[in-house]
Image 1 (cartoon, helix red, strand yellow):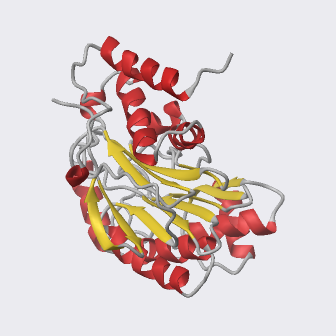
Image 2 (tube, helix red, strand yellow):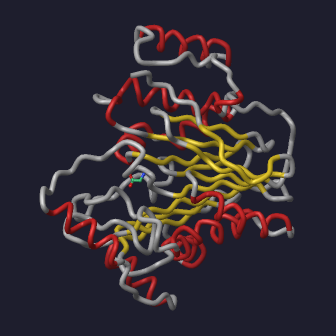
Length: 333
Ligand code: GLY
């Protein structure tokens, strides 16, 4: 028999208690100043995106949404700002390369009709998100990778470009001196722009794009192009995007779990908290990895949560001027 909402929540909280309460905050904690947002109001349009680069991305997305444009255009045009910014070393142009000095990009996009497109391990193209949209709209497939993704991009008129900026090459050469792969919480992991939007029609879309973990193994693909991990949405319910160590997000099917929890009645905040709590429970070394998740429900409510302090996201709506919100964290050192 399916468990009801209360039984499910009790079970989750019992799971947390079983963890001994060690290293974890209670899911029932509610502190709006620390980003626990609750709203049952239907508000649209709304746009929300990860990290500080979300502010600029939201501005572009908001222009689309406030002029009655689609959530799909809003998220594509919004995240393109981060992809095109050479100062942003975790997305698109100027992204940190892999250990061989090659910039390889991952991105995916999803619309309100449950259509999605994705590219992974794509080189030389500044806007992988637009290639992902082309995969969604102009091919019978969902995902193209590597040389095939590049071939498709060029066939669609995207131009090759050197994505390795002088600054990122210099950082890579410095890294080569020791060649240690040791992701640093909230420094290296200011990765990924993930964006969710709800338009005036009440339709949801989402986008996620990254150059992935700095100095990753050549060929490594993270969560960001994987529908259900880095991004998922269901127009009947809501959407979610993740950021942080992609391997942990993939292992937990982060974004799809958040959406399924919202389907069962969790608020976006509760859903994000539960995804993060599960990652803390299941990962071997939660103390040394960061994951952040944000979610947007069909009624325009927003939530976000992370393992460690430092994760924030940008929110803009008719009742919230474009600004940053610090997400609560669930792991206590
Ligand atoms: N979350 C981005 C990555 O791990 O590649």
